[in-house]
Image (cartoon, rainbow, N blue to C red; front, top):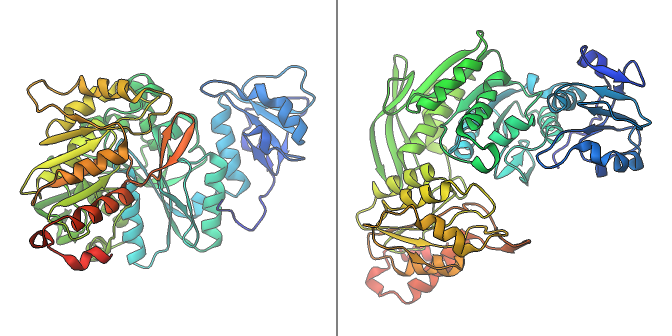
Length: 508
């Protein structure tokens, strides 16, 4: 866990939330807090918060055993021999408390928060690249890693709980990491995990169908995403995608002291890209920002990634980077693990591993790869079990624009993978070439690569950087990139010599 070496301070809940009600006391002074009863230590405040399936009040006895000294909750608890702080929205207050314990570190950093259905990880990584190429140390909190600028650890959630977030940001301050780029999921925004966070820049990449298993409706999903606008500091910047009409709804939550900047490839916007050309090695485009223009190059492939570059450029400009520094940072950018990541072992066709797990992301990735491919596009993917079922047929329809489709497992969890695939199949138009079904994901990846001919492209979609496949209650080792490498090495050994176009790559 990324933590500062300094201990947190003490916070008066009466001072933090003057409107709060108290039971058994007139105030509560806190120097440590947790929402997990099994993490309680002597003197700690336990936040008994409402959850999706249960309420924290059900775990007060566990908190007492751990030594909890006070309770923060949304309604008075009977027969609890502890001081209680009662507030209507306990999640929001708990988030503010966590950040208050560490002196609100985000107020002393330059922070860019990124939300959206697709592109969050890539955009935060581009923001970090741009700032660091201009000598501004930058931390990242997101789907792949939590990084305070010096130390990195694999992430457990796209957006961590409020206490983990506050500690990580305090660690950045302590290590003189002046900026942070943070992914903010719709779950986190709705659950108050971002409460207490202050953003200099809020970016909304796009908003399309996802997580209806949690949100229930698109309206609730959109409303949850829109909460990011309420986190922007006075004088801060809200960056919206002009090509996505859904992002306009976020303006309703905006403070009048926040500036708005738009980016786009199709519609008129404050930041635009044109003169676009792409190859398997990357993209070139002309970036226009106000009256300024500059030619840019990036190893990222696809129009959706150019869109991500524009969003990140808006944040970088707000933090004071010149257009020349932005162009330099884009050119220096490396790869984002599992985001259209090329796997090259000298074969005469392209192989990409991507995290695309929504219909919109799948469609964008296939279209992007097709634009740099002379042959066929083969896509191999599945859909997660115990997750949004409504998007499965939509993903099937999106995948039908590929030349060949292989359906497989993608974290089936407690569901029967054949049932998941049946729901994907229901969205594939009957006039399309029937997909191949290979339940074992490793075998499916091998099959996709074996079917590729010179000039083709293979996309392995859904898991990206992930290293495990969740089946039942087990997490089994499975790395799409590693499986692709193994399959390519086997394919190369059996390949005719004239098809080995870059033997030097085989030893990578």
